[in-house]
Image 1 (cartoon, helix red, strand yellow):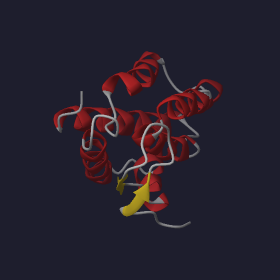
Image 2 (tube, one colour; image 1 turned 180 degrees about the vertical axis):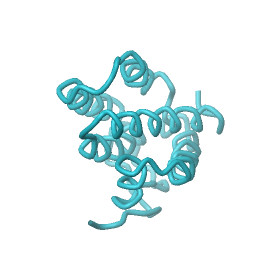
Image 3 (tube, rainbow, N blue to C red; image 1 turned 120 degrees about the horizontal axis):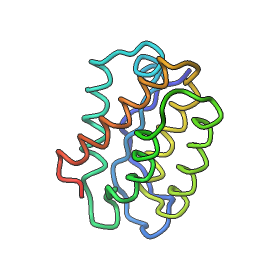
Image 4 (cartoon, rainbow, N blue to C red; image 1 turned 90 degrees about the horizontal axis):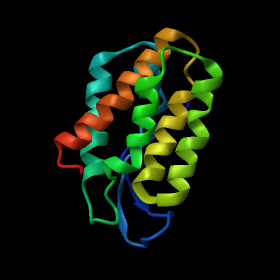
Amino acid sequence: MHDRKFHGGHDQGRGSDRDYQTFSVSDNDLDAIVKKGDSHKLNEVATKLGKHYSQGSDREKLSSSQIRGILDHLQRMPGYEEKVVQLLRPKLAYAAGRHGGKVKELQNVTDRAITLIDSSETFENFKNFFEAIVAYHRYHGGK
């Protein structure tokens, strides 16, 4: 496994050719959050992601509407079903392809996290992580 951390990035998505800071999550952090249910790591990473996704120009920021559909879908799921969970991946890929930028960054993190889901417990851990990202995004001014 390799670690990914804050690094200078170039937006490869649609709509912007500005340089801005990107934030990726290490494989070790995702493993701690999804596989082990580490709530301290969840809060640490979700806070950083939420703040990062709420910053930048209007074209760079992640808007709540861009991810609300995924959050609503997650919250309506009665429990872990591998097929349904795996179908979140193309939904996120569609949103990333449509919006690019930080939506694509979120898609990268969540796609990697989804590959770690293999039980009801890891599904709940992922769901808590995604909800926390959205909550901290809103807390830091995301709209």
